[in-house]
Length: 267
Image 1 (cartoon, rainbow, N blue to C red):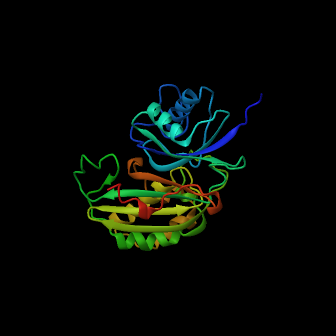
Image 2 (tube, rainbow, N blue to C red):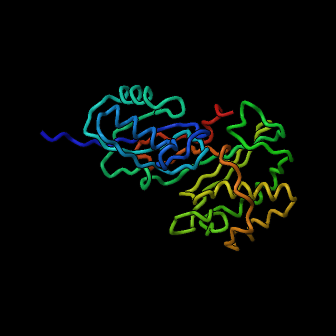
Image 3 (tube, rainbow, N blue to C red):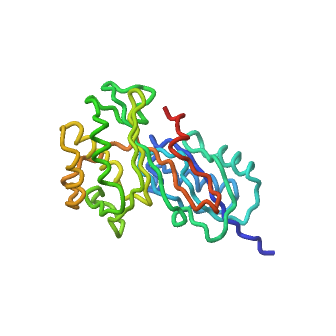
């Protein structure tokens, strides 16, 4: 008797500090995909492969990375979560699971993705936040950052903000919103878009910090964007302050998502 193959969507959170990103790498380099697929395969006693909503780089954290996989085995949702979490270790946790239609894709069904970058205005940094934020010595001019970031809204060619190793066929991306806020010593940069190029957010952040530190006119962001020249943008800053809040899907799919407003537990 042939067993029915079922497709599941799975929500994951992880601390990226000691992980080499999402995607499977060379032997000896631990990635999120390695941990998840090995744990799923062991728990279900069959080879499992996953597809994620968006690949995160080494050091990047996630609050709701969404993946999909297929299996012929049957388990309750509670059994899935308990069994998987007992195998994955302390760096990665499964937070929800949902059976989905066969045409669902964690990557291609997503209509938008959210990220947050965290800056801490504290030159010495903090032992509690050092792995989750970028510590800066100069005070950040939030007003300038807000003015400069407005030029990035909409569909644009982001060639100035893509890494040399970016494999995307198109440099065009659509940024829906950018919100910059301050909470004590922390500055939050929240960005939502349909998708992002490799290192795009980290280069944008490096450019915004450059504008603040060098007291540049915020209008320079418009010129950098139009130039399509990576050499004009700021440096690619550290990944440790970057959080992937995950994707959003059409409401009728009823896939859990996390909004920025639900994130007060980070700091």
